[in-house]
Length: 229
Image 1 (spheres, rainbow, N blue to C red):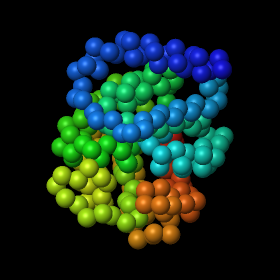
Image 2: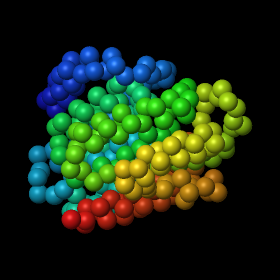
Image 3: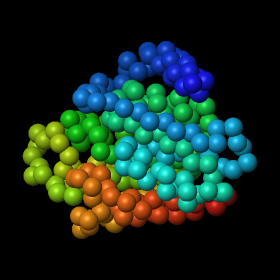
Image 4: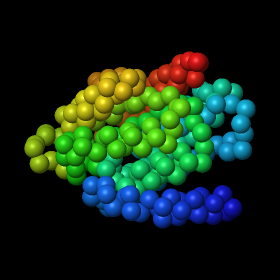
């Protein structure tokens, strides 16, 4: 209960201090349910480097296996959220976590949410999203994870408000452009999931087989970054 009270207190301070700044961000349409899940393990330990996984429910699913892979080499935390990339709430969530802990590696993604927004809105919001992480964790090594495909992609149209593989590909390409410009490596989680409907649990999420493939890739690339001077 003390941890929850502290977290709520910190969040309230971040919201209060960032209210005027948040008013400058573009409006973001909400989903019917909005959620945020923050998990900081070994909060008082300092003898190992720290890793933060930022993402959504896909990230939350592979987090436990990544943490297990890196046992004894790093403490792994997660910040998973439904907030779209232009939502001030997401930026405040990131600021809150990064203001409390120093992370050596940040593995991040903005994936399976915000389909009520166009790809132009996604592209327009991306610089502020990336800037927030850069400014709040200037010494962290960054790695971007692209968004995974659907099991069955609906037909796309210009005014779609739902996810399709075509839209996922467009957003992955937009993100890759920003990563290339800033020299940030890209974790390709999309390609290994293609052509494997048996990996999926429903249209978006994954069964243990797919989650294991993702976790192995994430842990391997994070560990490479941890070994870099």
